[in-house]
Length: 417
Ligand code: RNT
Ligand code: ZN
Image (cartoon, rainbow, N blue to C red):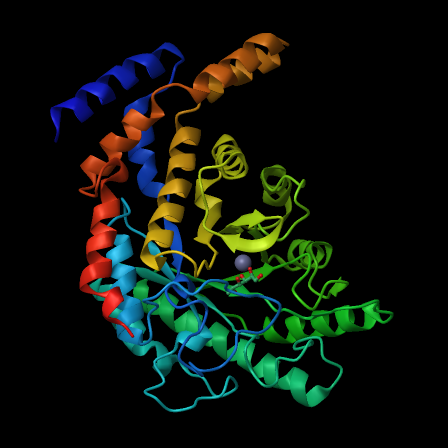
């Protein structure tokens, strides 16, 4: 390892020891920060069911940066490249539309574990574990209501789809010897004043009851709420209150997508409340700009606060960390690497927080001392620890990954026309 990196790390250990922080332990604990990399940043949420179709369901990838992945091989190649620039061992999060359908049209109510066999093998070979998502959007039957649709034919179609997705996740979990996190997000909602709010929510509740009636072993079921979508501004059937209630009552994991709340709402503050009433937490770490715009995650205050709360609650073993953004305006591999490393940096700072000292101050009513320590902690040399961690894991230190991505663009993605 570069001598300068080691020296800076040793100095950081001294600084942190003064406030009672064990830097070596923090570095070890970084291995518990397992990210679930969302496959959909590779190709702007297109998938392989209908590669020429339009993205629907109130979400949109904006931008036209060249070089998006067009095939399953390209998606995998890009994921492997991105992962090689992110320290640690991580998971891959698939959507149903990314199945290996062999060029044939497989409808959502026909999908089977066999369509994900090649993914499972690939993941094992590349030391990834897989997570999964049912896909309600970008389909002729998506409309504005799926699992909450009063039309039985459509509702049953989506129930069947979601049940099948849970079975696929079960197969993944069994195969990899680690439960697969199976996330359910549907876009159901409406653009303008809705007068039958209760009815659609009743229907969604009934659909979920039916979907979850099948007991599985290797699946962690998650339900993801949202505030609104494009074209569904007035009413979202699966609102936060709805899923929080459902999750608390039925022992389901509530997914917190950091773009799915009012912009002044603190997602960090939800952690300690959810932990008391739901089994685990799933995160979709994102960056909303003015709305749920799915910008690339950066090391901002929101993400830092979220990471700190998780560490302060000692909840790493109950929190699943997924990323969720899709920026089509910049190099997509770069987008993964920036967002993943930013999330890791936030968790590293959280692990280096002098929490014990802060708690003592708080308990003693020494609030000046608490605030002063929080402020000083911001400029303690956590970045020296980050460089050391990257060097230790044999990934590029600092901004040096930029040239790797530029080279990959020259060699690989720029040739995709
Ligand atoms: C949409 C949700 C959802 C999707 C993915 C593609 O607002 O955040 O998680 O981003 O399922
Ligand atoms: Zn999400």
